[in-house]
Each structure stands twice: as C-alpha cells, then as structure tokens.
Image 1 (cartoon, rainbow over the protein chains, first blue to last red):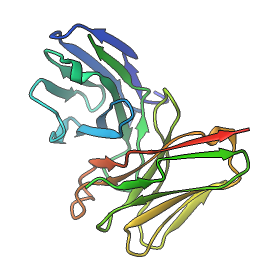
Image 2: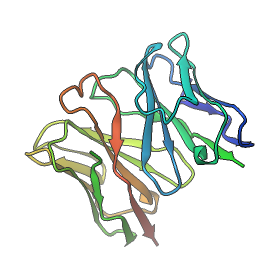
Image 3: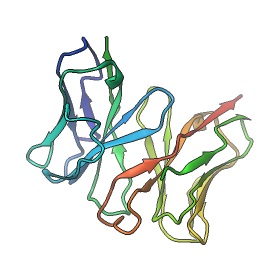
Length: 115
Length: 115
C-alpha cells in the first residue's frame, strides 16, 4: 500500500481480555518495528522483524506480549490478559531494510485503552 | 542510554528561528530526526551518519558534530506547519548498529509556532 496501515485505530478493552493489533507495512519493506508511546513519553521499542524473523525481542515488557509476522508482510502484536498499564498508543513502522541509512515510515497507531 | 533533547519546549512566532539539540555522553552511530503532530504518526525528517555532516531541505536542516555526541536541528523562518513534537532517535547498539535497528529516543521537544 501507499503507507503503513494499522488497525484498529482505537481499542477499548476490559482488564484481563486479550487484544490483537495489526500492522500492514509498505509493500517491499523488509523491516518492521513495533513501538509504544505513553502520554507525554517518548517512543519505547518493543520488537522488530527482518522478514519473518524477530532478531530482537528485548523490548517486549512481559510474556503477555507476543508478535508475529507472516509472509514478510502483515504483523500482529498480541497482548494477553491486558492490564491498565498497557494503555498507550502502539505504533508500527517499516523501512526498506535494516540498514542504518533508512528512516522509518510510521503508521497512525492504535490507541489502546484498558479499563 | 537515552539521548537528551533540549529545550523541552519552544514557542515561536511565525518567521522566527529555532534550534533543537540532541546530546549523548558517548558517540552516537547515527541520529534520526522525526516530527510528530498531535494525534498523528511521527514523520521522518532526516538521518545523519557522519561526524561533521550537515544536511537539510527547504528551511529545516541538521548537523552532527565531529565527535558525534550532539546533533542539532535548525528550523529557520518557521511556519505554522512546523508545530509539533520533534524527536531524535539513535541506534542503541553502537558497535552493532549496522544490524541492530533498535532505536532509542529522546523525550521530544514540543514546538509551537503562533501567527
């Protein structure tokens, strides 16, 4: 597609429920990243994919968080048993490859609210 | 180690200039600059890779000092559209930055341009 697409744009869920966030990167971009942004905070790294593999999962806050990418394209971030501290904007970004010379193209994010 | 941005906030009148700094106590592999408008995704501005590098387009430019410990973003003759939060990001793993795309981010500089 023309840009990075994320869905849903907003999600309100009850504490303890599972949620799935979807990211559709720019066609041909091999690198895909998930970050989250809390109110007034900078961006917090969660995970990145090169193709379908995730060389660095160090940013996932707990084992309730998982992510996968299939076909080198769409990625899903799953949060199980959501907690109130999971409330944030979850941003996905892609870049042509993992080289240092490329900037990211971000999606508009999913605003997750856990009540 | 998170880069430090300064100032935290700037208020300008249209046509005025601003400088935003991104600093680190150790040399950075590279510096990425992004602008985020309220409720929108961050938008890539530019990357600087080499000490002493200067880069820019239109009235937004940036520099990277020789020691690669500070980058500055220059906004000249500011326009209303420049308003937003500016973030710098840098690869976390200095020596492995060619393969590690985990960016760590400053907390942002909020820029407001008023008529």
